[in-house]
Length: 269
Image (cartoon, rainbow, N blue to C red; front, side, top):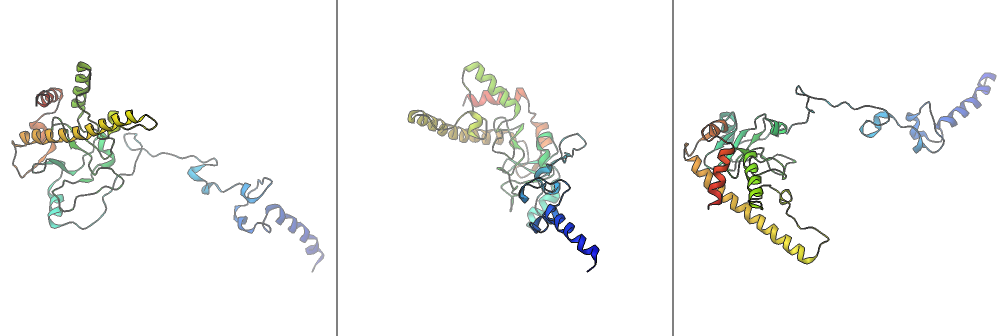
């Protein structure tokens, strides 16, 4: 061995000790110019391995043409359809009112409230294999209002409204006039301020459970009213047809006057 190699060996050994290549061979790929005293767990980590772009990186949120945050839309999984369901998806090109069952079915339109589900297929119970949207409480983006059956309401979340904007405004106006709320129009009981609160007395919880029971019964009563009102409006059309929602609303225009009329007949029942 040459004299130069003998002189170089101590320098190589000291360098290996400094970067930890001999003592900690598992982190040799994580060497950095800056090293802090202590075990390998305290050494700087690669930026790419840090969660959510920490250690000095910057995340950029993509936006669409309307400067809204771009989100991953619900995509219907590819699967086999029956001949009837396949023909249905070919024939219906827009969201329609299915007259036999009274629900909306077809491709979800691109509106501010349904942007996340646009172009997804919304099914009705009469289909052979109704679509199920993963990660959603309800596989529906829009429904006819439970009061007037003209406007649209609903949504894929449990925190959605059963009534349209106009009917909710009339409900609030009657609450101010009468001193109590006529109808609980939230899909979830907590949206209506109804629930059993923990840490309260047994008497209070018993009263809250009774209120929760009344809410469940009121939802059934509203659905019965909706079925009655829907049949009255649907008599205008072919009983087996799929009527585009725009045609339905052109014949039965939603609005504040229509909501007041529906409330007047509902409260007289």
